[in-house]
Image 1: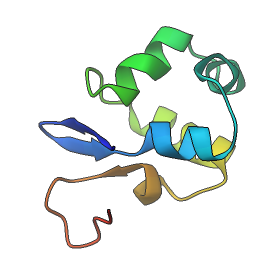
Image 2 (image 1 turned 135 degrees about the vertical axis):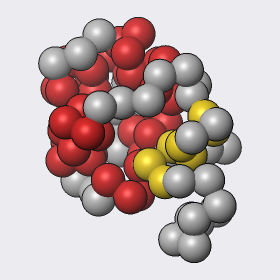
Image 3 (image 1 turned 45 degrees about the vertical axis):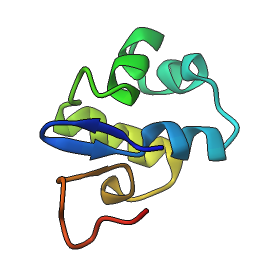
Image 4 (image 1 turned 120 degrees about the vertical axis):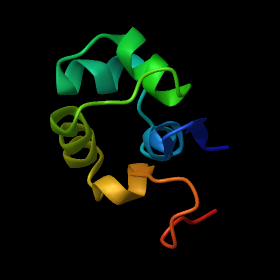
Length: 77
């Protein structure tokens, strides 16, 4: 299930797991802590634009596949 922050829907966990990565592996690849990845996945922390772009690049997807505005027309389930 996608993580939901009041301002952002995120699918980081889904995309990370689909690629067989642990939180620690993804964190190392984008130069943040595992806790940062955890807090993003749980909707506690909204990543900066730079970090969102790094995460998308590392996961080989578009930023919109990771993060969307709640209720946006491009939201998928």
